[in-house]
Amino acid sequence: MTQSLNDFFAAWTMTEDEGRDDKIASAFGDSVYYSDPRSDGALTDMASLCSYVGGFLPMCPPGAMVEVVDPVDVKDGHARATVNFVMSAEMKQTGQYFADLDGDGKITRIVGFVGKGAE
Image 1 (cartoon, rainbow, N blue to C red):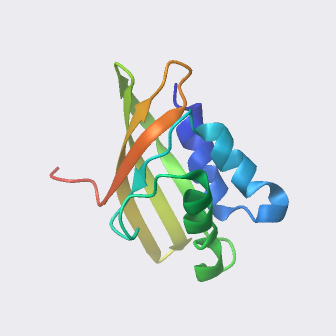
Image 2 (image 1 turned 180 degrees about the vertical axis):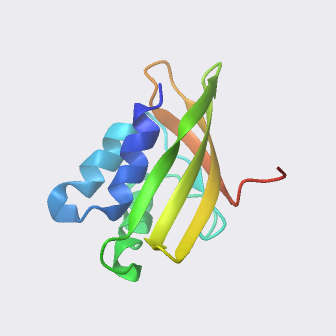
């Protein structure tokens, strides 16, 4: 159930030549909804989502990584994942993402927040 989340975030550091847009599309089901603090509103079509994700890598230094931290919590078709955006050993931002998954485990809606919330 969590492979789609891993695939989606793996695409963030891929070039289009490596198949980034195909990787993103394979992670999503029939509908697309994506929102995070840096997106300009909700992205509700694949072209907008692919363009948004494609803008990430050019801002990054070489070697930047995006990693889904285990474990990913899954409950009744919903998932919660912590994601690290690692620019360097000294610079990392953590986000918390909440996703709705279809019956095949594909993302249909995902919303991200900065940080991990109250601990």
